[in-house]
Image (cartoon, rainbow, N blue to C red; front, side):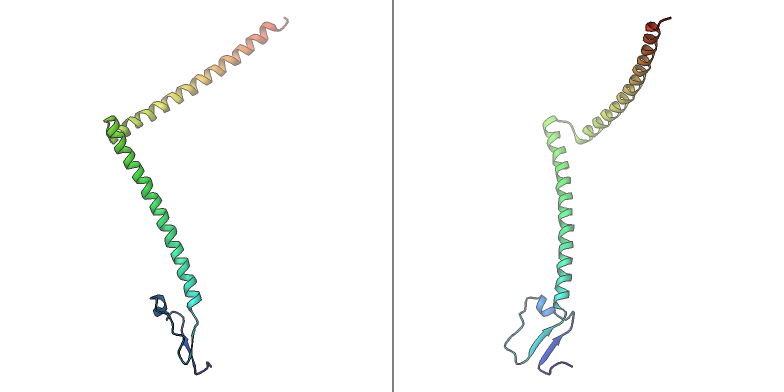
Amino acid sequence: MTDPKTFVIPSGAHASNRLGVSMRTDLPFTVKDEGTTAITERDLENEKATSRRLRSDLQACRSRLGEVLGSVVAAEITGVSAADWKARAGELLEENRVLHEANRRLVEEIDAVRARNRDLTRRFNSPG
């Protein structure tokens, strides 16, 4: 049992403290707060999580703003709209794909020619 001159604040009943009201120390009894530490630690973790989420949201907003401003500036400088840039980018990606495929086929042909050349060179240089 607690001392009759000790007033215990149950865990979770610390609203006056959270509102910035300071506890009086000149009272004729002792105030003992049993839940403040755990609640404060939980509040701190919640605030840290909120801060991480807000930082992530801010980064996403900055990234998107950069994309939009980049499109606007590019359109102002070149006179080409963002839709035209996207269409051109799609055309270039397709052209790049076609060129990579052509390059792959040519490398295969060169490898086949080199192999044939090695075979003919061996035949030519062999005695017999």
